[in-house]
Image (cartoon, one colour):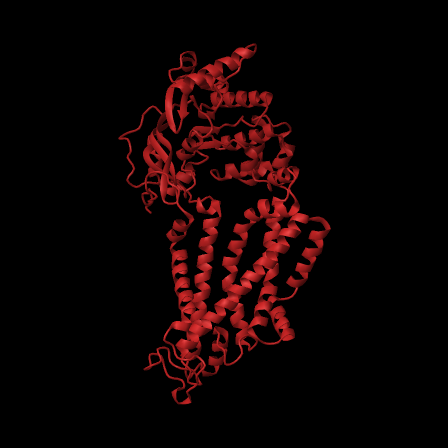
Length: 598
């Protein structure tokens, strides 16, 4: 990565569906864990047919042979027993007990969680209080107590480990089931006449199964470690049977004279547990669709830019904002799909450009690309240039780009309830927007924030500044968003469908406010919408987007009077007019039928 450009590997072209298996193998750590665990399990399974000496045969004359001794690859222990043979047989025992305990805990704990979460009420309360009683004891002490009651032995250790891990599965599954039990599709299943068992088995369990699998994959290594811990204390495998914990316990007496006796089984425990952990992380990523798409990854501070992007030779000298040949897309499972293709548009000072198109046409991706706000991963700008007063934004150093956000280019987002912080008063949030680019004292910040709130039409701004976002109406929240966008007198404001969620009266007020502020401050305004009626009211020029490309651009009046592209004609036809009645529906249906024939 350089100061001026975020370098990313070029993804493969096209868009294809990648299998879960391929995705798992593309995760290097998970693939290494899978290969390592596979080899260890294979060797353990082949223990009966491998040419190994008897793991329990003692030979005092051969005791404490070092590693790589003749006939003993890993040496011998204090009784002359071959460590390699005992290691393989001990791994077989430890993994069998650990995996079996995981399966038992998963079945019982998941069943408790499913029933508790689905039944709710008194049943949920009784079952969860029982789980809470188990969780009230430290799990190691509880396991020791169970083995002390049942007696030492591998089977009793298995029961103890399974019991202490049941609450972990029960709590995880119960939480997911509780949310699903009130979902619409479950209510629909009840109304269709399905019984409770059928709903649990066909509606809820398939949705909970990924959680169960992920929990099993991440706890199996811990259960093997617990098995080794009990055997280390003499409560698991009993002599002469070997498992990794008992080998580690027997070798501690020779830790200084023959360290390999304890180091070798300790290293094997480490390899098994670490391989299970990294494999479990990979399985979690594969089974969670949000993780596999990159939606939950921490995005970078700016959108990734292809280092070999094609860029136009120069900017439009008269434009405040000039976008040329922009191509922005997303990578998924190693494949690239373009969302915006060869988009070119410009804005002059004091001008309002409407960017119009249906949902999914690429309007918001275009707007977010201007200041590098498309999340990376998975977003990437492949081609084009974005000029702000003649300076290429995509080549700006990261610190300068961040400084431009809010000061030179500001955004008004579609849903202010999701962009405003729910835990801070609106006045403080406006102050924060000012303080990000201006050094003012506390009093000056408060005065300026209240003045901005008054300017955008918030009544009793001084009092309302102490209110939280949820205490305001939708129109008032949108006005707060406009105030934050105006906080530093930007050259360009990008309004991303700011009136979509508002009623007609409030929508008209917001449009009037934006138009007045634009004329008052001489700002360039990029107004994103899907409504030609809004475009006709506020925009000087309009650019029509379809499938990620601009299909028509021109003066608003000219485009409305004589649209050239069929898509533009359909968008205009979808704007209802008073008194049209049935003729409106007939006109729209004719246009769509002609498109289908074409």
